[in-house]
Length: 323
Image 1: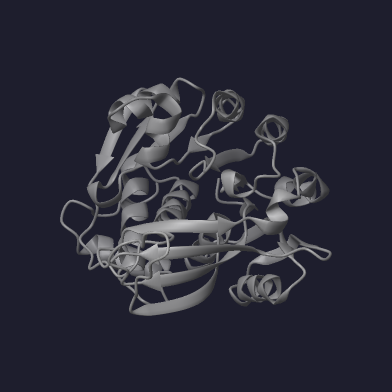
Image 2: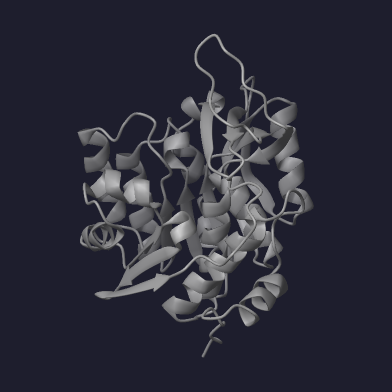
C-alpha cells in the first residue's frame, strides 16, 4: 500500500487561534486570552502538514480564495513539499476563515466563515482526478467545512476510486447544521464506499445515536467501512476492523493547544497503515504523533523519527514493525 502516495481532498482555511481563553464571552462582553497566531489550517491542511513532516508524499485537491490568505496556504504547503497542483484559486473569492478559542486545558471552540468553500462543489475533485489516479490512498476531509460539496454526488467519486484500487479515507468533521436526517442518509452512501473512517466520539455519537465508543464503532462498521477509528481525546482511541475491537490509551503530554490534534493523529495512523503495520501499531503511531503535536507551541508537526522515539520510550506503546 505504500507506493503512490496520499491524495488529500477537502477544506483549506486560515485559523486565527486565541490561546489561554478561560471562557467564551456572553453577547456584548469581551474575554481576554494570552496569545494569538494566524496559521494556514483546515483539516486537509493540517493533515497535509503532518503527513509531509512524517515523510509521506502528499498531493492536495481543494480551493482557496484569490487573496493573501490563499497565497499563504499555497506557499506553506509548497514549503513542506506538498504538491498543490490540485489546489484551485477561486477568482475573486475569499479564503475560508476560522476563529479558534483555546482554553488553558487545550479544549477549543470554533467560529467559521466558509467563504469560497460555500460556492465550490465536487467538480473541483473531478477536474483533478489524475491526482487521485496517481495515489494509493484518497482521503476526503472536513466535508462539512466545504458546504458546497454534495455528499450524494461525492459518493460515486469514492466508488470510482475504490474500483481503481485506491484505499478511501473519510473524516467528516463536525456538522454545523446539526446532522439532519437527509445529511445522515447521504453520509451513509459515502460510508459505504469508505475503507477507513476516522470520526471523533462526538461525531460518532451524532451519526449513530450510540452513547459509548464501542457501540458507535460497531454501528459505523455496519455501514460499510473496513476500519472504523473513534478518536477519544485524552481517553485515547478505539478501532474496529473485521469484527475485532482494539483500544489505545492516549500518551501523556503537557497540553499547549489541541487544535488540529485529530488531524495529526490521522496522519500518524495512516502512515503506519501504509507501512503495513498491525492495527494496534497504527493506533500507537497516531497517539504518539498527536501527543508530540499538542505539547508544542510552534514547529508542531513531528517527524517519523520523533514518533518512533516517543513510542520506544512509552510503556505499553512500543511500535510494531511492518512485516
